Length: 104
Image (tube, rainbow, N blue to C red):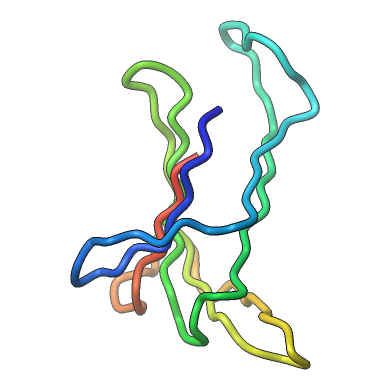
């Protein structure tokens, strides 16, 4: 999988790549037809300003094959660290803050 995460400014459309990101699965190698895999990823939110955001994730798993999901999150500072709280699922995202886009 290609990892290309970015925080995207909604006005300029310019992205800022994250420093620490990874995408992994317990299984490796070629994925067979009808095979299901679980993936997990790590994102560095340390430079994302405190506020509410829409996290949009897109996974391209083949030519023209994509899966996407959006969730609402709140980035907070607590004890010198950034804390992420999930606010809303994809269906309820009409009026949530800036958009953070992640392409795996």
